[in-house]
Length: 130
Image (cartoon, rainbow, N blue to C red; front, side, top):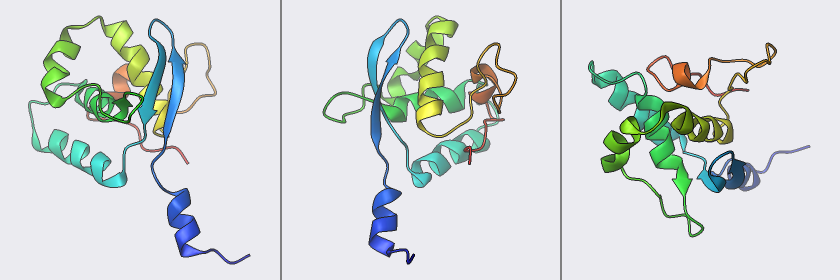
């Protein structure tokens, strides 16, 4: 089977999924591009004072969109998200990590790979799962 470049590029395009998140209902999550992921990681790496939650919150801001694909949050919302209930924010971050191909360890599931969301939201964020 020959791989067609345009078909491969189309298959690699970022997509959106709508998932049900406990406590929030249906949430639409857009996958981030490699360039967006690199920008988020570079910003965190360049900031020695970056909070442990920076990766997860920035990924959340970049990924949660409305029905028209418009981001729900902006970078200006990060301080408010940091003040929100941690476990509630973690539920959204877990959904975003999952939609973006990051392994998220579920409670009681020793077989899952990758750190928990709290660890994943810091500078030691997980690598995309294969």
